[in-house]
Length: 181
Ligand code: IMP
Image 1: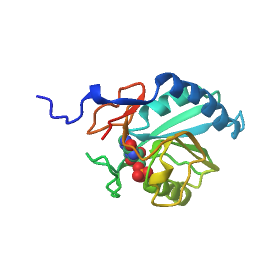
Image 2: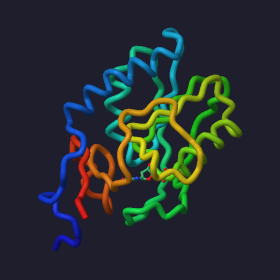
Image 3: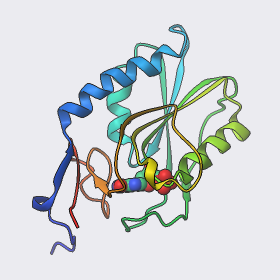
Image 4: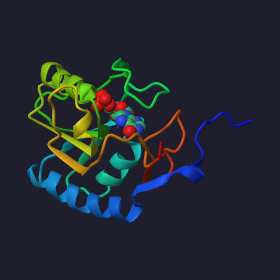
């Protein structure tokens, strides 16, 4: 029995697979250009939503990469942020004096990005700290924060696909879409 209250047939395309992949070519070049080409980059993938974006992004990098994974949850099963961050796993190696790139799927209220930026500055003392997000919902911001790099600015819509989920579903879609009201 399927309990999901959204039907994939109702999903409207917002950003196509081709547009995402084209944007990643540009983003990867822009991000890499701020690091010295001989320097390692520690890429921090914020699970679960960034899994697709992060995997596709790092494939384009020419620098030596180390990948680390942390897990934070803020939405639960809702389509509005609960404003209640749950740090599920923040285990990381020593990143003192390292080049760190945090990779997020979307910045919505900004609470997660603010939490992570503060955490990395206070706890890890990186040499360079860079924040990249595929999507930027600027109009939904509750705290002042902006990523150093982002792919697309979007309206205040709940989106799914390419890592982003509704109740755990739709992460596997290669494009980003939304359910009309
Ligand atoms: P923020 O802390 O409100 O900026 O939200 C950050 C997290 O909420 C993201 O990393 C996503 O996992 C989740 N999120 C925010 N907006 C959406 C959306 O439109 N669809 C799916 N997940 C979202």
